[in-house]
Amino acid sequence: MAKAQLLIDLSALQANWRALDALSGPGTETGATVKADGYGLGAGRVAQALAAAGARRFFVALAEEGAAIRAALGAGPAIHVFGGHMAGDAATIAGADLIPMLNSAEQAARHLSSLPGHAYGVQLDTGMNRLGMEASDWAALRGDLLAGLCTMVMSHLACADEPDHPMNARQLAAFHAMTDGITIPRSLSATGGILLGRAYHFDITRPGIGLHGCRPFDTGAKPVRLSLPVVQVRDVGPGETVGYSNTFTANAPLRVATVAAGYADGILRTLSGKATLWHGATPCPLLGRVSMDLLTVDVTGLGHDPETLDLLGPHQDADQLADVAGTIGYEILTGLGARYARVYSD
Ligand SMILES: *Cc1c(COP(=O)(O)O)cnc(C)c1O
Image (tube, rainbow, N blue to C red; front, side, top):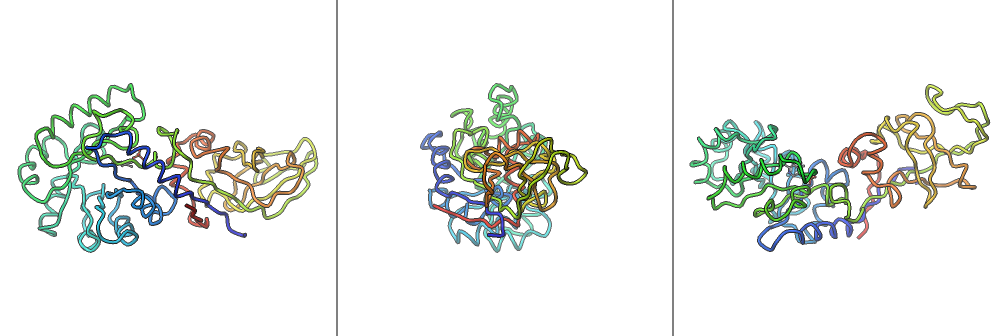
């Protein structure tokens, strides 16, 4: 096997979706956020597995992503686009039957003029200052927008992964102030908000990272194993160096494996000299720099030459690797490279 393999357990994803669904009451519908190619795992297969588990509503960032989900799922499930209705998107939105979450007066005007009679949602800003209409825009437009084919009103929490952060209650209050009394379904929470409790659930939730068992839902199953093939193995003597810029020097005889994946595959270069790969339950330290297509790994402790080494798996999940790299599990997953063979099991 020449290509690195990303092994994806779809039943683990489904179990996580069910567990997140069970955290909210029967009056709350649990959707699924599958932007960025389903957090790196392949949006089509991920969406199909979640639909089979019961998800009927999907969320993506861009209209093109929505079209890919529609192609995988066929007619039926609702597909919402967080980025709203951007110039040039009308044909994609209409063709794939997507629901743009309108973020501004400009987007509302664009949507209503280019696709009259086509459903939409509205995204409100409750303090994150990233996407969504501000209270003043909403006050001016809500009468017209709610009288039309509006199917959801949503906002997004900035600090939901910190349960004690006062921003959560502030945004909740702002969302109530902007939406109480409307009869259209409301959505406020992604993974973090689901864990904040019933007050944050409203009618629809939008978990993404929790489907992958990452923080803040790190009690979930871990669906991903990243298995990298060993290209060659060599002896390195004391005083010899390994990799670019000679950043590692052996101080004892070592057995060093060269593995076929690098920063072009999303293995962050900041992991140089710090990461650990695994062979079964045995840790194998990364030596020297991460190259574009290759890693060099100390396999001395194994006592034999391995055929593969794992970067992600039961002994190291995306959050743990992210801690070493100084980032978050989201970035590790969404950076998983296009060169990996994605292999699915259920
Ligand atoms: C990415 C995103 C989500 C999913 O968030 P997770 O933290 O991955 O659960 C939900 N809603 C919006 C608006 C997002 O941008």
